[in-house]
Image 1 (cartoon, rainbow, N blue to C red):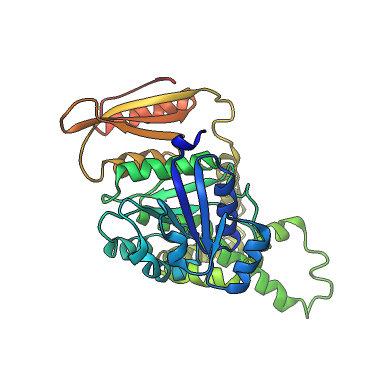
Image 2 (cartoon, rainbow, N blue to C red; image 1 turned 135 degrees about the vertical axis):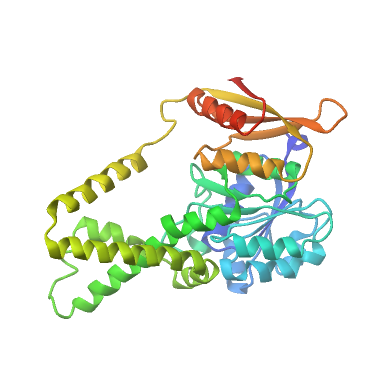
Length: 373
């Protein structure tokens, strides 16, 4: 990709822990990006970032990092994203796209959208990648490759900004899907946040019993180790996440508590038939989770449709596709004629996936067609 076809001449990353540092390294290696600048609030972290060469420029002030940047990622802990945004608002240029890596989206999205400077565009983001390790020392450029990266557009999302951000993330090898902020937070409470808390409780329970049962950790089997692996995650990060998505987490914990009560009744009553049915249902659902969709699909297809030139259309379509569990490999909108409509093209991997997207969009009232790209 030549310099003239770069998506952004400068990208800034604010926050250089594991996630931000890895993102900076990946962006630096991407031919789609020119200069990569980064900033971290801790001087010792900046020193390590310079030593590791994670970015072209490691700045001592956030305003310096974002100056002239067409794309800015806020990669600070979830609880401090809004604060990080407030420090750079006066340094953002018209046309700049701002995104973030926060694990909870509703609160952050509402806050940032309410304070966006004129001409600056925001699109929430959440990469579904990481590890139990933390810090810039653990950063690696392939952290996002093959991982799902969720974007959370709203009715205020600018279509061209979405397309450009989507393109950069796809260039990094991420599998980009779109979900609205509320659905995102509900989903994360179920598949990410509550599992972390349950892992925490299991580890705490075992820790309390270790004094009573000699060698308890020694005999801990693979199942226990798998279920408690995420209990080793950064406490500060997860305290922030629990605070940001508190309502939906509490909702799911209450559901889980009710299910535990039902399980206790099954065990006390020795209802083996009901218990076996529970095992079968869980086994079947876990089998579906294990399927690697699209593994047999090799061809790229274009799904095209006419769309009205109005706010919210890209959010509506991309989140509808994301709700199917389908990632859009690329997205584009052209306006071939003067008027109030445009042609949107979604690149989808696999004929079955493309047909499903086309059928779904047709049911929503769009004139959608698909063919091999």
